[in-house]
Amino acid sequence: MRIRECKTEDVAKLAELYAGFYNELRSRQGLKTYSKEKYIQEIEQHISKDKFFIAEMLNNEVGFIRISQRDGIFWFEELYVKPEYRLKGVGRSLVRKAEEYVKTHDDYAYLMVLPQDRRAINFWLRMGYTILNTIELAKNLKDTEENTRYVPFLGNIFQIYKWKIENYTSLEAEFLELVEQSIKAGTKGETILKIFTDALKNYLKSEDK
Ligand SMILES: CC(C)(COP(=O)(O)OP(=O)(O)OC[C@H]1O[C@@H](n2cnc3c(N)ncnc32)[C@H](O)[C@@H]1OP(=O)(O)O)[C@@H](O)C(=O)NCCC(=O)NCCS
Image 1 (cartoon, rainbow, N blue to C red):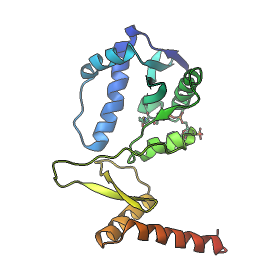
Image 2 (tube, helix red, strand yellow):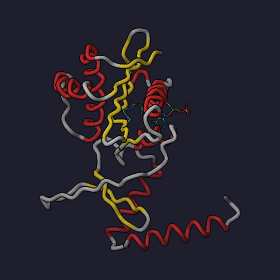
Image 3 (cartoon, helix red, strand yellow):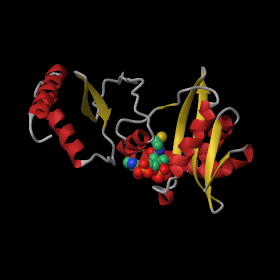
């Protein structure tokens, strides 16, 4: 496998990978997908200012990462490996290459990941991205019904959108279901925090750790 920096002449190759990234995500969210042509103009704009690395295997382009810079902070914007080349170390190699690049400028690399995207979160944790740095919040100003799940975090309850295709483990799905039942029964976030705390205290005291 070879990781190389992208040049302006790579736009067409990148467009296929770029469309792969966004269309996979959009399908899971239940949104309509687009042809790769839609992304060409966007990539042309990015390639003039951002850093792209592309992964090649036997002369095939199999994945890419885009790194942007805003106010001296480096962001991993998209990382994508074609489904048939996954779990072969391509994603890791792209991240390590991007980290080497960022390290020449700054000591931290940042990224955003959607809370529903359990697979991506697990991948990033595996890569060592364990600092929860920012919480991005949104509000629906149209006051229409939202199709969301509830997620407790340190005594607060947040909502996350339900996706058409979700990848929760059975334990995660059961947990989310029980939280939803509790919230709908009027339980407050502080109470849920207390329940966790008491359960952990009992667990730490018990023999079967
Ligand atoms: C996430 C993604 C880039 C991973 O690429 P990959 O080439 O399959 O990853 P690698 O083979 O390099 O895996 C590196 C490590 O992460 C682990 N890993 C990879 N995908 C994982 C997943 N879905 N869940 C848990 N661990 C995962 C691998 O097991 C490996 O662990 P190791 O330490 O035991 O070797 C790829 O699945 C992808 O393109 N997904 C769709 C787009 C996406 O989610 N991008 C990231 C969000 S921006």
